[in-house]
Length: 406
Image (cartoon, rainbow, N blue to C red; front, side):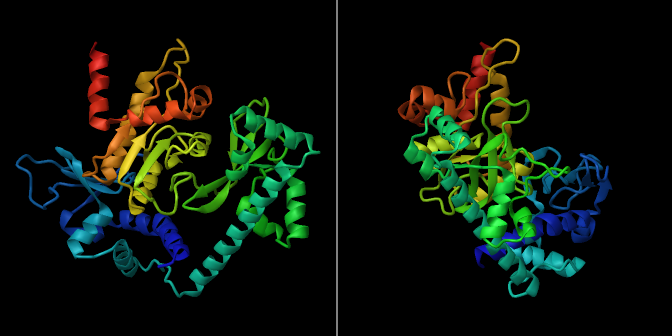
């Protein structure tokens, strides 16, 4: 299957296939006699009085086996860590060999119109996806060229900002940083000079608010191409200077939760280093410390489970978590407890996706900082030393608990 079709199929699975599978769990697995509990609430789940092997427990339990909407996993009370995803369970029960066969079965059962490789709909989606990628690539080149317009004062301020963050001119070019002029000027260039329609442009990279205005190109003038698996998927725009609001804005529709930012299409040695912010990943990449990816948040949990699922599909064999160490807002001291919580939630998500996976390591920054700041202040060699001293997750947990107990 080609990559375009795989992406189309995954989007269909996430938006139609999996929800339909969950909504009809009692029909897909009739022997469990599932009952729906608290539907369409955060605690929405199905419950069965049977154990996962379909035997009855010695002590009556109306919710012996449960499946929550949030993670689509069969779990048995008393054996909570030994869950199995609904998709894997269906493969196991029906003797199916692939996720494709699972959703083909679901499609047949519930008439969901699953995209087929040679269908007209898929061909149109492929064509639209190709045009969108071409436009985003052209935008990246346009922003990169605009950054080096020596006569533009605002472009100069973006260059100076990047240099103040420790990036050399060569690194700035290699990482494809760019400058955003006024957004109306950007639209004029791509509609008048490049021949794109305003509808194509807005679909690929819409940033306007409901009142028709945007702060991109006015306050948010640094363009960061959002690249996953070798493909540009949109942009993050960063503000330069003081402004009462967020540091970053993403274009409408940019999915920052399904794939790790900066993850390559193929993992050469199977190892990834997971950091929080995109700039952290780019800074570490610029000093050649390995395959560094960003989760775009403080922990791998919730919808970001998909990032781990995708990493496993790409053959990840070792994961090193290097999360920020923040300062406590009240005391200014290192907030080890908060970082520990984020680390353990991330570890639990990884183990939930693949219970047998053990090669999870924790690299601990020694003071309140993030990888970007640490590299700027201490250098690449010091950061590499932190990564080399990473502990297996079980040792990290043991050391943390011993330190906490005194």
